[in-house]
Amino acid sequence: MAETEALIGYGSEFRLGDGASPEVFTPVAEVNNITPPSDTVDVIDATHMASPNRTREFIEGLIDPGEASFEMNFVPGGPGDEAIQEWKATGGRRNCQIKFGNTNVIWTFAGILTGYEPDVPTDDKMTATVTIKVTGSYVSGVES
Image (cartoon, rainbow, N blue to C red; front, side):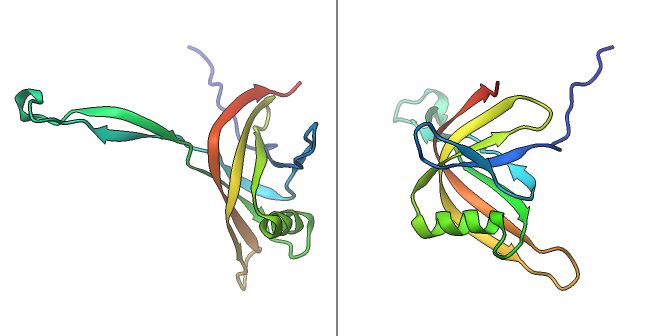
């Protein structure tokens, strides 16, 4: 019987690129949950007047790379907050990376900041959720 290869996410990082050449990626501070991009494929109805057995026919459409998001400890004015506030102020597309903990695997993708939602509860830690619309395909690579 083979042993599992399952991993926990501990040690993973969400990194933001600086746009320079060569580009430098800096981990966002105090990230505690990451949701990587998730591809979906559009389904296009290609049914016509002579489709066999009066049955709909479909073809594959374009791939939508979806969104990526992460949750971080919200520290107003802290490094994570400042990085997202700066991106929000300047706008535009940024390159991002997810480095998966306990591996050298990195996904790199471009995205547009679409959401920054701090949560300030009375009796729990403050958090913020950052949402990024992925534009184009992500590239999987290995960090040396």
